Image (cartoon, rainbow, N blue to C red; front, side, top):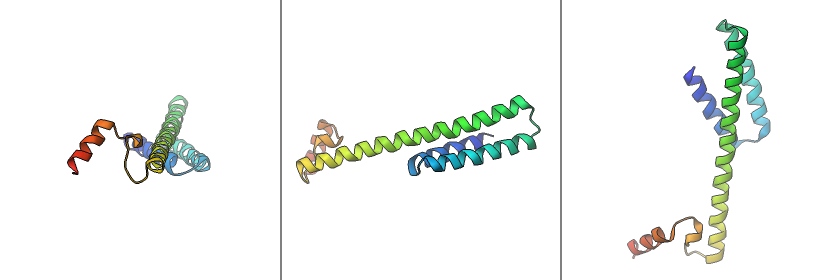
Length: 111
């Protein structure tokens, strides 16, 4: 069961990073059918089967949302770095996300 939950987390996070909403809908349908099949094969009662369905869907959709957040955070960081390079040319600057002290230290070490 734990391995299935970990696989759902990885699947949802990957879908969130790489794909759009339609792929999530397909994955939700597949997980729904797989959860029903697992519940029937394991001879769960109604409440246990319902809980299995809800937990599987919540894990998949929650990790999809985390993938979307990670994708947005990376794209914001990349855009800030591009804007900093455009403003300052090829010279790196602290606006690209590197703290000023660390940037000064890196400059000192590369002399």
